[in-house]
Length: 272
Image 1: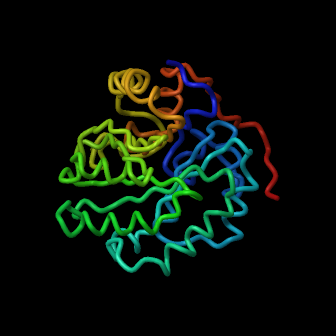
Image 2 (image 1 turned 120 degrees about the vertical axis):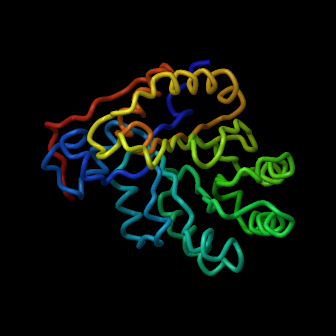
């Protein structure tokens, strides 16, 4: 199947990379207008900064105001919740974080709950995940869980996520998890990570690793096994996938029969 625009959202992980100046953004672009330039090319973006801190309301409002209504953000849950507290006693952080993200309105696609590689599945951690899922206001937000240890690849975990309408996050990361195309919600989430230790990638100015065959296989898998089973797909590329995630985004969009746009280096955007 060929997805309709608005059904499939493909973008990058982050958008403020200095190496993109001259290769994706105008060379002299002001940092304040980078998001506007980005939104002229792609309609989705994974926010990484929320993993490190809860953004101020005025920052979130500016993200909303600098993007069109069809744009979709996804945001990582703060690492203090997932990595430091291990999903225990988190209400004091979860509530203000979700209140902050709610300022994005319809532009918020979903929240990504990324767990550390050392978080292994056992009776205690499985129960912990179940208790945390009960805290999530699934009627108001979409959530995707990214497990980074193979012990979580089991039917009980898929069933638990499915019960709560939470998406299993698929990863293309050779050192962490195999690709597990499981569907547990009415949407799915995919992260094309690549190898963060690939010696060929010394900068993010251009694509330097040939991922053509991998992308072709992914496009075939999406059209055959995944897209017919969901109403929305969020997919994001890391710069380490080939060296330049905007290039990979457009390659995937073309393989899926979606329209692509090129950066406009000549357009001057307002700072206000």
